[in-house]
Amino acid sequence: MRISVQDLTLSFGPRTAVRGVSFDVDAGEMVSIVGPNGSGKSTLLRGMSRLQRPTSGRVLLGETDIRSLGAREVARILAILPQSPDGGSDLTVRELVYRGRFPHQGILQRITAQDVEAVEWAMDSADVSGLATRPLESLSGGERQRAWIALALAQQPRVLLLDEPTSFLDIAHEIEVMHLLRRLNRDGMTVVAILHDLVLAARFSDRVIALRDGAIALDGPPADVLEAEALEHVFGVPMMIITDPATGLPIPLPRPDPQLCPVLPGNSGDERAQPAE
Amino acid sequence: MAASRTDEPDASWAQPFGRGGRPSLIVVAAICALGAVFVLTLKLGSVDLSWSEVWHGMTGESDPLARNIVWQIRFPRLLDAMLIGAALAVSGALLQGVTRNPLADPTILGVTAAAGLAGAAAIKFDPQIPQWGIAMACVGGGLGGGAILFVFAYRGAVSPIRLALAGVALSAFFGAAIVGVLSSSRTFLQTSLGFLAGGLYGSEWRDLRAMLPYLAPGFLGAVLLSGRLNILALGDDIAAGLGVLTDRTRLAILAVVGILTGCAVATAGLVSFVGLVCPHLARYTIGSDNRFLIPVSALYGALLVGGADLIAKLLISPSELPMGIITAGVGAPFLLYLVRFRE
View (cartoon, rainbow over the protein chains, first blue to last red):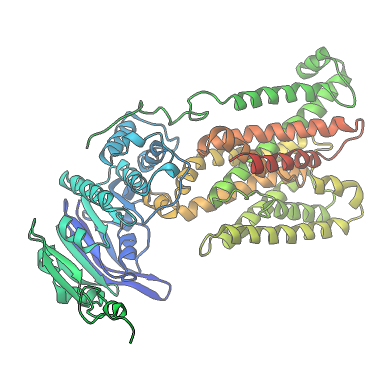
């Protein structure tokens, strides 16, 4: 399903975190949001769900304003996974994932065959079926992250929003989560993820949106918009781009500082290696 | 993705009594103990009745004296004890869930004292006030206490420490105000000690009728909110993402706590520890799913207060102790045991 952000402004009291942002994410598109800390990424994602009320502007799910839908109605279409959730640590994985069925259930929360099917599918997709009876607190960081993703999948959303789903994960788990998102996306889910890692953003997304000071600085396919000068403007550090030999996609890297890089001449490490006169 | 399924679907979910899928033995034992308290309360007291007198007293085919003891005195008082025990335990379970804080309880967070102050003020204002008037005042006070809690705890960040400190302050403040109101009345010593310590002396059908209009919707509300409370336990953002209106749900839960606590205070005064201990006990036996935790807490609360009232009547018979002394005397060491020796 298509999600449209129209002139969205989000504030905390007097502080404006997102100012007049507009963009559309088409059905089945996978979009990464990047940007420095405090640039408004998380706030934007919260504004795109019902977690934060906009100061002005609106968000459309399909053709409908998200504010005109009920909270549970939105939760049946759109799932959001905030950054490092910490609740429910005494639950087993299956108990946690069942709670993702809340927006589909009646007041008595009777479990239907459809609930069972959705939960098993969600656990299979996130590859946590083998952990179903393990308490959340006994899992590693990567396993726990996949369990939370399974919770979001149990909502059977058509739009999935994730805030740094790969933070605190090692490379293997990072790749695993990105592959999972890509697979879900291939099956038709619209995915919007905040990513810290520009290399992952370049490799796995159809489109990258970079925020700076609450406004969009870059928006387009990774091969077009991930350029050194533009990224320098966004992140405020010297950048350079190399090309991934496997895909031809850009790999953005911070440019080394000759004074502080151990292998470049003239750095302090070399000087320290010299015997003192 | 390759799925390694190690167990049957639904093996660990939706089991009312624990993860093994078996009814917890402790829950079964508690139900049996509640039955024992029930029959012993009808039989024992300052006048010991025979089993047949108890039976005929309940069915109404006995001599007027036994009928009066069983049906007009012991049975309604027993129902009052069990209902207020359940009300306090459910209040504690709801508060512990909504604050995500194991220390929460209507007494510690000042709701009991707020209800008690309203009740004491009502009695001071009109010493002839009927029981339904006291119940109304206490429920109003409980709702006010819940509202104050909402303002203190949820404007801004929810910090367990801030919540506990605010609760202790409110509790002390309202508690002092209660003593102030009571001690300025002439009948201080006779009536007030039972109220302050928590007791069911002279409790009868009138008390039950006065609190029932509030208790019934209170319990119903607790059951209906238990599923949402489960979702709130996952954290605010997750809950909001799943379609729970977090602030509205919290306000509803605190209103239910105010109503249930108000009912208990109107009938038995300031009973402490029931709301703190029973939810912990329930959590040790059946886990943290509020849809089961709330009814099992109610069971333990009914057992604790029903049992405590029985002991309070028997210990120095024919006189009696305030029941609240027994709940604290049993509850506090038990909580210490759980804290020290169980994970």
